[in-house]
Structure formats: C-alpha cells, structure tokens
Length: 224
Image 1: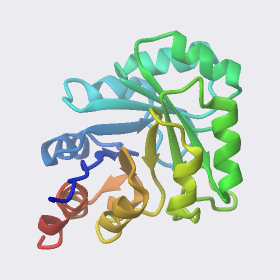
Image 2: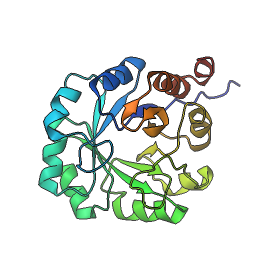
Image 3: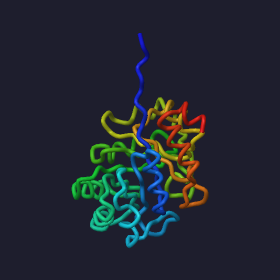
Image 4: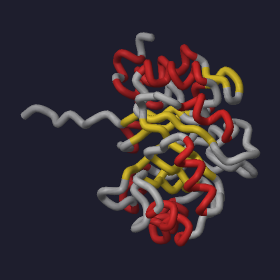
C-alpha cells in the first residue's frame, strides 16, 4: 500500500512593511501576507500607507490587529480588503464575534501558549466564534511570539484543537526549522515574520525564498 501524502500547509509571511517585500512574498508563492495595522508596534503600518502597500496583491491579505475597538477593527480590515482578520490581543469573545459578523472575512484568534492549558482555554472562549487559532510561543514582555518557539508537545496540542478550525503555527519558525515543524505539528498554515528578516520590518529576500521553498517542498528547500 502506498503511504498517504499529507498536504503541505499554506504559507503566511507576516509583519510586511514595504511594498517590494510584499510583492516578492507573493511572487515566491506565499498564500497569505500579513500587515500589522494597530499603531505602536515595530512593524506597524500607517493607515495612510496601507492601500499603497497592499493594493493589487494576489495573495490573501491578513489584517493583524491588537485590542482595537470593533468599529476601528472593521475600518482597518476594510482598508486593505482583508480576507482574514487576525486578533492578537486580549479581545473579549463579544468583540471577536462582532468583528467576525461585520465583514466577509475569516477571523483568527492568536494565543501565546506557555502550556497546553493556555490553548485549551483559548479554544473554550473563542473556538466557536473564530475560523482559526494561531498558536505561538510565549516570551515575557513581548506581544506576539517574538521569535519564541512553541513549547507545547505536538501530539497533545492536536487533542485540544477542534476539527474544522484552521490551525496556524507561528513563533520561531525559519527555513531551517519549518519542515520539521510541519511534520510534527501538521498545521494548516505556517506563519513567519522575524524568521525571514534582515532587521525588524525589513524582509530578507533569500530568507523568504528559502522559507517558502522549505514549507512547500522540503527537499527543494534544502538545496537553496
């Protein structure tokens, strides 16, 4: 009997701040491109620049938001014609539901997981309200993974994630680690930001090329 071929996950390049990086991500085969639209973060994109940065990109656009009021979250997501809204703060279930109902986008809720219980609690509070759960590593004082690898055991993580919920794996992924992470965690999407940067907010073309290749075709990626 032939072994079942497991489908490769989709690839998201996040924290994009320059048009040339966004265009290259799409050219290389990224399925989703993410933009931090909430002010005050190292990779934040000004609302006035969002259209020029994102207009015409063929990959799905992801609006990354942190603790925005519902009306502003909806306006920011609409400003880039987002197909996914990624809520990365401490949003209440009521806020999450309102954002989801306000547009034709999918909603992902991010959880910074120190333990399996962190993921289980996020699923309990948000699992019925969202389309996907982004799970990443935890680091003191950092909102977002900050390059921290997820320490939860892959086998146990899958036991608390409901069927039908998109599982987005983030935190600490690089071209050298993504193939093994895919094999261990079996995510629907792999998400990278700092792992393909030359410096914060500036993507490195070679690192992006290697990451996308390794995520989509590990054998090919190892030769780049």
